[in-house]
Length: 495
Image 1 (tube, rainbow, N blue to C red):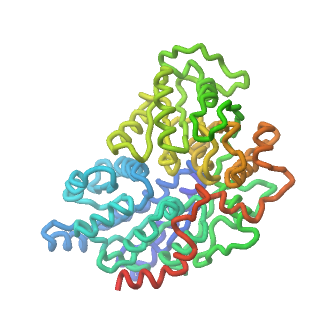
Image 2: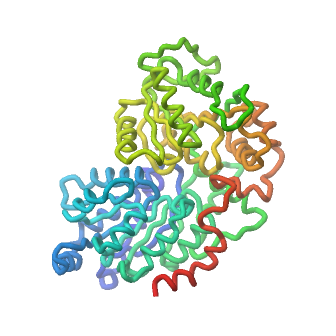
Image 3: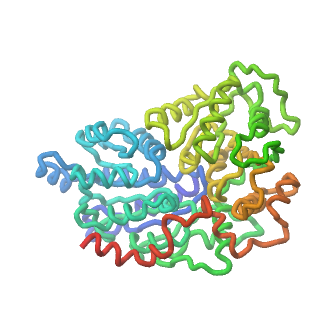
């Protein structure tokens, strides 16, 4: 078992005395932070399934019969930000439920709901869903959450970044959907970082006196206080002080497994236009992938002298910043003879599933993607992650490279940066400075990259760099003003 599992499973299984716990609700709520690839999914799945299997759901069965089997009453709900993550969690749940009577059902957008409705009508004990599709089914009265005693919000910071806060609050706080109040359910909130928006969400949804903050991350000897700031005490919103950007950086650094070897490569581009396809950088990508990674490579590309080439049996994730770039890189790799597949938000759900399955099964050893698979996705035996261009945010960089180096395995992360990539963009300069600080040995960074980032090792993070932890310089979906007015707005919605 991993450290987060060793600590989280007993906490979520802890019970009050029998006389006080007739509804089989755990004694404690949980706010948990852990490194990428540390086994968080099993940490909440095992306690949920233990409770479902040990208690006969007489109340929900009675309600199901009273509704003439038209409305399902699940016992547990897991919310996740992306379709791929929902599908992965449902797959892991199905493995644990093999040869039991427990039925997990996944609900997510991108495909017609008829098949999901059919699965739902066959019975469900546990729902894994994205907020949007779940809300649609709740509005259609296909589901009611009156007996949902276990609620898990996975990747909570990403859910809020994607603008799902209104849906989350409507699902949990609206009386017509029947979610039990705080004392009637156990809530677990898993998040890589705990920005103010996540702290406010925890304050509203978790049982304060019974909430435990769990932080399982490595802390460097020269940064011993890292573990003290990751998970705030229940109800304590993280205040924006002059140290807020430094605290945010420490949170991100703590989520990077030490097994990942990070490298940055500077590529000179002859075309000065930033929107032009970086041909030199693509050539460098082919060099890093090496001819052995191709099934029938037609080129005579030589191995990289610096030893950054990868083998033919290694699985490689290539991240791009735009959907158009993903399509073009994938097409070019296929022309070069590489076994490549692609995934981004504009593809149909069938094609997205096909790409993920081919990559998982080893039929393709290169997956070109946007950040849609950067959070929570667990691909086996991914040894190399390549960023095709500088990521648009430091948190995005951390979660991308977190697809390798999982469960203590070694991993490599290579970021290819074109000479015309950063320029005078202050936001990208801030991202580049953050990467300089994350790399274990900054002396190995290219001098051109360090100059473009305007980074000096002796300088501390500037006060205004906190925006650079987000995906872009735009206003985030969960703005402080909306968080400030959340109570008045939601009262009008639900009265």
